[in-house]
Length: 318
Image (cartoon, rainbow, N blue to C red):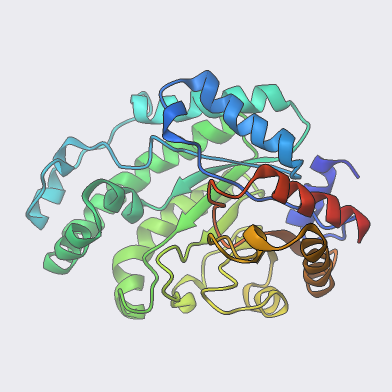
């Protein structure tokens, strides 16, 4: 199997010749303003690590650029949010930049594009404290704002898949921490906009992955995402304390993970021999059907590409 065949089979739950590997980093800020350098940074990481597919990043475009969010203090002001529209630079810029990478890759490998769920896009602009203040002050106003963002995110998804040629999205859902919302609150306030984008992406591609992000290091209330469907689930093995075999059973689809992404953990400190042994152990748990080897979340800058390459070489021996 080549990389594209291997990853496509894994996304469809079919047996692969060997387990695919994919880890990713965010792009350093010094490259954000130059689309060529930004694309080359991602391509360089792909070549140096020899991962099986690419998770393209949206660095520089994470905060939602709605003027109504500037200096917002009252929840009622969320009703002032207006759609950006398909021609807005926030949307066209991402499509154009992703397309540069895809055109260079051709059909060599599968590519996914990172898209945050609507509430996270708003939070990345106004911060967690204000997000929580506004949603508790007037949940309906925040639901409205998220619905506006969701419609624009759907335009982005369409452009990323149909214009840029990306195979699918890497959909990061957050805010599911056990101490943030009750299951009922999440289902009422957050899930509708989450699912509006995800269901639309699934209507365009069967190569989408959901990332159940646990970046705040607080376990997620995984039950709030039980109705979220995609070909692949990327979960937090070390924060949500769910091992590979249990994750495959729980999510009922191909799962993507295995290594801790946090600085100072095994992947950053172990010898090459130890990493090879752990790679073999993780593959023995996941098997060659329904498993992609990766990490809980993005790898930090201090982890060298060489160490990721140790993993991609190790899987070829198993």
